Length: 114
Length: 115
Image 1 (cartoon, rainbow over the protein chains, first blue to last red):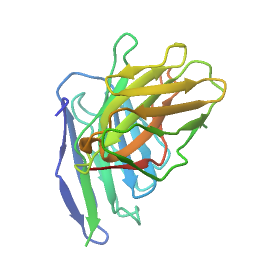
Image 2 (image 1 turned 30 degrees about the vertical axis):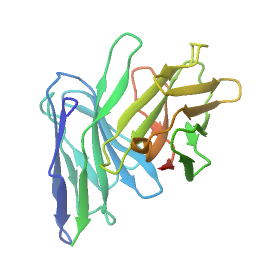
Image 3 (image 1 turned 180 degrees about the vertical axis):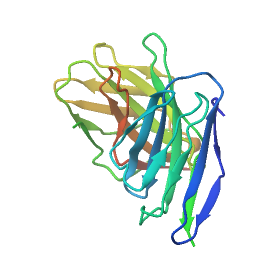
């Protein structure tokens, strides 16, 4: 799994409901990311976190919230303020090394609205 | 803000042939990183190849190679001896490096390898 696990694989949200997507990494990496993927849109950055208890908004943060209380966990909450939440959500960890920085992605969560 | 453009929404190639996917980007940075990611039907994002802008030599990974033209801000991916398992969405991505490391993706090219 590349050291990063997302759950659940599929998630359904009712109108007005908040839902939380889980992302866990077991390789002690500092930086983690959330991307949203829509058909024909590529990946767009929602939030990212470089260290525990700190995170920054990406390009499409409105309607989403995150927390980073532990290094290994970076959950994403899709709030009721996000009016178009149906999408594929990908979490990633940053693999750092000399001349070797890159992102490794989880297997994703498909969120749909009931 | 950096932008990444993939001008070919879809491409197809016959098995065992060679195909090139195009990518251009816009940046004022001098040092940065470029990536190609592959997303098969399973939707798992897989890193294909990585290029550092300060390196003049084009990166290669087995059947995958890039043509990096820094002045033209072009970063194409060549797949040689195409295999059925290469069928996937391919995304070009850019990172400016530094402390705020984050990837900006193109919209992708759907590559179909035909038997």
